[in-house]
Image (cartoon, rainbow, N blue to C red; front, top):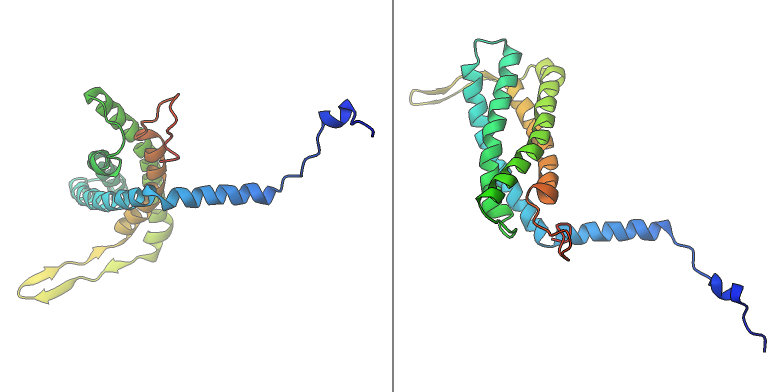
Length: 204
């Protein structure tokens, strides 16, 4: 009986890999990641972000009033920035204490380290937010010219008419910035995985 040659053993036959299998595997990993505790984490982040929108809006209105002496569009940009700076800090505190409460915290130095990283990641998202808010204000919402007509429910109460364009610009920018902020926060700002450890943030 003939024996197999060395060349036969050097290159054993292998099945061709199907590119669809790898893409299907990546999709399965992504769905599995979203199905675990990260779905709850995303919900918490969204709730904190919703509160952050309220803080952002409050300080936007305050800034829009304080910067009234500036040109209208410049006042809106300054107010966007003020609301962003304040809401970043409040969102960090809530996310650190609640959304990523399972991550190792360390001491006060680690807290400031996380705060610094969060400000970097949130600032990148914030640049996107302010940019998109400003662009949609100039190119979309102002040309539409939508106004709130005012409301008089009676009993001497009245809500005056106001311009919707700066507010709609704010909401558009916040929505885009929130997606970027979540990914940066989960994968970097609140990371606690060790370099040589078996645990990784992607798996968590």
